[in-house]
Length: 233
Ligand code: HEM
Image 1 (cartoon, protein in one colour):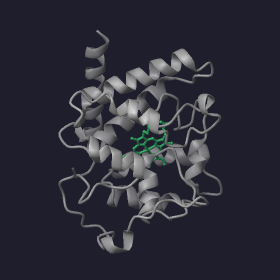
Image 2 (tube, helix red, strand yellow):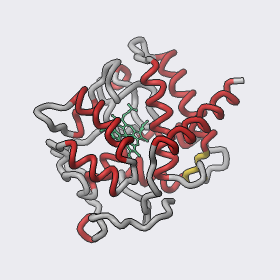
Image 3 (cartoon, rainbow, N blue to C red):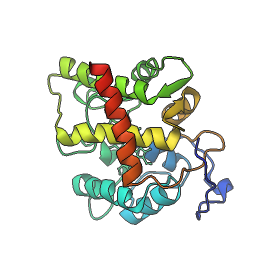
Image 4 (cartoon, helix red, strand yellow):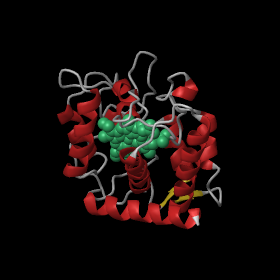
């Protein structure tokens, strides 16, 4: 898990108890944003969030660097923002330019799920976990293998499969953030992955890592891509 004590203004943990989302709350295809809302770091109803709120939470609570946060938020507000805010479910928007894409680790493709691409799918997630070779950890190689598998599966079975260079890059970036934020030394405990994806909460005692910035992203993406190349040989 993470290895630095949080010194942020979110230090008073008792204010941020976990409450699962209610039916009327807005939630996204992103387990991290949903977890932040389930804990009240983001508005619990997930609605009408200005970029400054996300910027602060992602930097202070999740340890994303200023630039990493800015980059993803710029794309999010450009594609799904309205009147300067967004609600988490807006991020379900499915298009060649959207952050949401086919071939996910825990959600079905829009076309194959009657537009339920924002909803957690247990069977899909179990398939992701089945890539763990030891049943205890998901390593960088396991995550790379899962990503390749789901992409190929969508390409073969989704007649409206959308893919492009940006989506390819986003797919590896998401995986790299996952390994960095939730894991340690390039691997994630299965137990922690279950809490994060299934309950959309943080493992007990989780603390953010030191900043995840351009350098960290580059090196984690490179590790994933070389694992993928070895698997494709
Ligand atoms: C520390 C920050 C973040 C972490 C750890 C994180 C993690 C993840 C992970 C692991 C997925 C893949 C889910 C899957 O394949 O089933 C994902 C998907 C997604 N994330 Fe995040 N995320 C973060 C920040 C953000 C931000 C800032 C946004 C936009 C405002 C965002 C939007 C999305 C969207 C739209 C998806 C769906 C992609 C797909 O269709 O698979 N995420 N995120």
